[in-house]
Image (cartoon, rainbow, N blue to C red; front, side, top):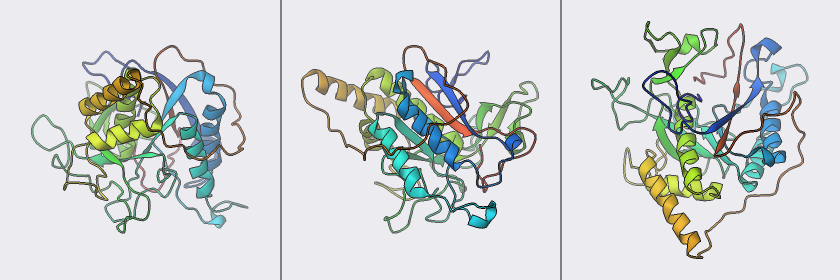
Amino acid sequence: VGGGGEGAQSDRDLSGVAPDVSLVSLKIASAANGVVEDVGFEENALAAIDYLIRHRDLGVNLTNNSWGLLEAEPSSVPGGEPTDFDAANAVVEAASAAGITMVFSAGNDGPEPGSINLDPGGAPSAITVAAACKGTDEGQGGSCPAGEITGFSSRGAADGTGPQVDVSAPGDQILAPVSPVSVLTPLTECLDPAEPLYYCISGTSMAAPHVAGVVALMQQVKPDLTPAQAERCLETTADDLLAPGIDIHSGHGMVDTVEALRCTHALTARTALGAAPTVVAPPSAPDTAAPSGGSLPATGGGVAVALLGAVAVGTALVLRRRRG
């Protein structure tokens, strides 16, 4: 997913939304290590976020989370327990309080209302992203009409009381670099024989990095941009897709990169003139354990983005139709 939103440059005539950021990848699951379907990685994921909180000196102030927690039966794993969503939300809120903007994919269990990932994408401080269509006209390369939300994209709660989508971004047949041995290879929807390492993949996991990339650009404009400011600028400048206002399908609408950056510039100007920006303070950090397995590499100047995801080798790791 890093090739779409944050997107390191390649020898192709394309780049991601924010090609100059530094990337730090945190592996939270591996089929090679015996991860059981739907369970087994939750604690790793939360520990990875906690690690970033405890190591703010690494300079990571933004994460893309193309994963989500799905409630599991205790019998799925010997001695297992149901997912603790309160703990997941608490860690996300703690990261936000530490100044780390948390971007999450909404999930691929749509189009029914309330199908959004239960948590931690539903945490108050998380920016939860739906997958929008690219369009089917010549040159657009999508599978559904522009201006719509894909059928698979998870929706928010119909009554407005549960987790909701915040914004939308392209998630329909997104071109991305994929290793030939990746478990994502069977999920690819288009392939150019001349470019065997670039595949088209659909999913909210491909939409979230677009938004993370936009936030990275915003942080380059205003290095002290808070998570609350980032979310507000994204939501207030998004373009309506389905109907005026907020809806359970697209949230506030399609992210508008240019307008979000203008909003960020306005915040910078206000701060320079002495006006204190409004900051929403999330709850304090819980005391959770740091992950094992070594330390993260230090990053250079500019914006550093952490990518949290599952890496599987040899066998497919399926998370209830989560794609990309």
